[in-house]
Length: 370
Image 1 (cartoon, helix red, strand yellow):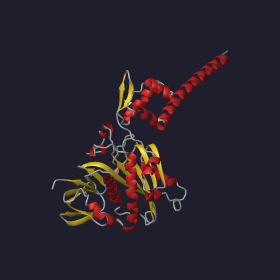
Image 2: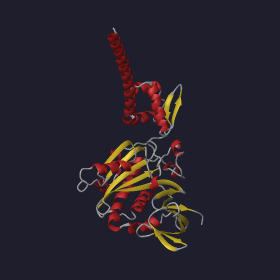
Image 3: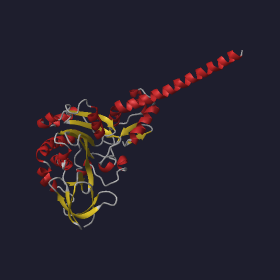
Image 4: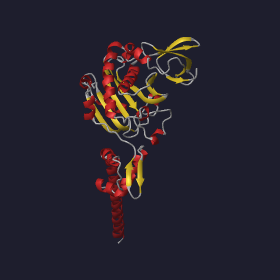
């Protein structure tokens, strides 16, 4: 009898444990499915909400074969990612922000022939930690760094969850609103040949936007793009490979195109987007990226031949700091103040300090009153 009772209790515990496993499995499966929806059908959901019409929770639930609660959670997640979604108890949901998606085929159609020949691949992703990190990981994973050249590889993302700017700052990267891109380029002469490259990239970005009609853009050394003292775009270069030999450079570019108000609250400096620079037009992200590539690719090729000196005059004509007193931020206790004297042939800057003329190739400029 004792043995039978013990066996019964064990059997009951086993059935209870099995029911718990089944319940946990259902929860896990639903979580996996919601995650799958967020990665592969998020585009469809946002596109449905962005058509200007109301969509009821019941309609969306039927379309995606989910519960209305799951749809509500998905809407809440999209709001947390920065999208301005309006809701009405009797009507449903609709997206108030304009969303502009990348399309590789459309982008290719905007490239001039010479650029298209140098762009080896355009990879469009919905969400990445950062486009630079994805490119660096790709460079690490390739089979043979000496024979596999990824020059011309372009990575685009609709959203970055861990976007970074210079000096480790966070680059706010909401979904579907801005340009987040990286370009891989091989430099056979090694890291020693890269002096001034970041300035050339910033200059190419400004020239591309000017060609598309945007005016009054300036460059703050080394590569911030400003409009009326507010940041519009930035550049982050990261090097992979042997610094003494051939190396690959990941050229990261971020452009504020149509920044929603909610994520913009997290930006810790004055900013602007293209919709504010020119209120008469609706920016096209594919056209913007193609324009940047059409300018950047030939400029990189010229830089490889002639260095920054070939671009110095063009850069200086757009120099935001010309004629001003500045503070160069080099680190705690090492900041330098002086009269800004412009850029040198190698991309460094000259400052007239109390110790005389000095040149600097690193740091960040902070403007102060003359």
